[in-house]
Length: 314
Image 1: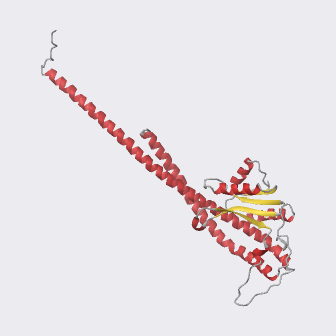
Image 2: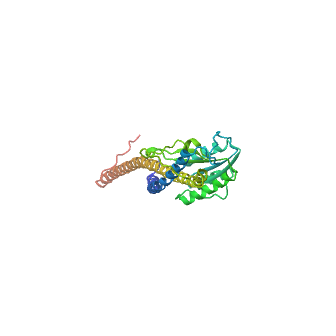
Image 3: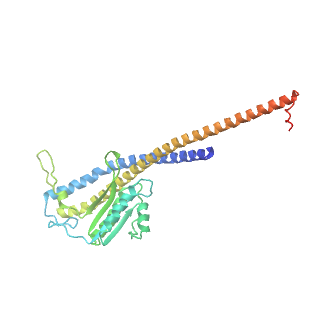
């Protein structure tokens, strides 16, 4: 059994770790609230762009754009571009593992893949496994901004417009309802499904507005698509960042709870060892006192002239 000094050092170490995990919990909570506020500001613009694309499809169904699947249906893609969004560091439970696991499974199904990674954790993961990453695409997962999302969209759209890749897919984590565990999503960013935008009907109290698109609906649509793609990527970056902070909060809360349970066990162990040490000291003191009393009695008998008994003669 460990002695008192070892238990004291262990308790001190656990308390120090608990302070760190508690501080990380508070920091993650603050970042989560800040990111949610930024998302609330940016999402109305993204929804407006989506509604404009829906309005164009409502007015014209014969739009021919390479951003959409043809009316005849899908065609088999040959080359894919994957945008994988991870964190810059760990200590967030299974957040990074779930994203990277799904990304590896998805990319293993295709021969030609262009990989774009957001987050240092994901970059190190793929580099260790010698999976090539686009070298011109290095962004941190912290503090997502629309400017960064627009730059990412430009990189992806360049490959798509030049015919280097046939499909663009995004893999990221999304927060569950009520702060539940994150859900990993794999969405196809380009090309779009026509049915996604063709079911929109504008409700204006019986009056349906008509718009003229200059120079034509197809050109207007293709001007909106880059901003729509950037808005979607920005939303994915913020959602991933919020999911990361929520996962880190849950991980730090679990760490705090485990540390408290460990402290309770160590306190019980410390009290038992201390009680055993005190009992042993009392026993030793009592035994010493008893021995001293015997010595004093013997010494007192000798000083009173008492002779020790003689041995019998044989």
